[in-house]
Amino acid sequence: MKLRKRNLKRANLITIERKNKQVSEQFRSIRSNINFSSINSEFRSLVITSASSGDGKTITAANLAIVFSQEGKKVLLVDADMRKPDVHHIFQLPNYTGLSNYLIGQIGIEEMIRKTYITDLDIITSGVIPPNPSELLGSEQMKQFMEVVMADYDVVIFDTPPVLVVTDATLIANQCDGTVVVVRAKKNEMKDIVKVKEQLSFAGANLVGAILNGKKQRKDSSYYY
Image (cartoon, rainbow, N blue to C red; front, side):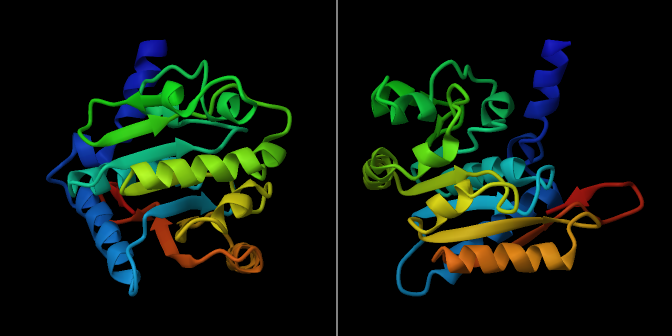
């Protein structure tokens, strides 16, 4: 059963498993739109978040990280969702130690960076789930971490918890170049998306735009982002 679960998670890496499909091209289009959105300077740090859980933010973050690495950039994907982490499942990585362990001083940055089978893509998993994620993400240690990794990588992507559930996303978003919100079709209500926009704006985040996820494309039940 565990093996089957891993295979299902791996199948979510659309940009690897379905390179020639239209759904993969959607992610490349999103990458291009993000690049074109940076008028004065390119986006080197991005927060991927959503209004609520189950909207597809982690899958989006993972596939965006892949298409940025396919562009020849050195990319780091950070699982900053220390409440319901999922990045390690998708990439089939251990999660005994990670970001949370670094933030409490147990390990160094180099010890938590994990190489992947994808060229130019590294990952930092969430680590052990702590009792105080918001305090850790808002700490001075987190600011120092972001400064270090942003100097070492061309693009750093943070997968964060939903905005309307906890404050974690806003704590990171105001320190990054841009924030992208994943919206689930037929699930998220407009009033909730407006609240997300308001909270991110109040926190000083640079909202780049939104990605519509789960929109039915054809009668064969395929989907695109």
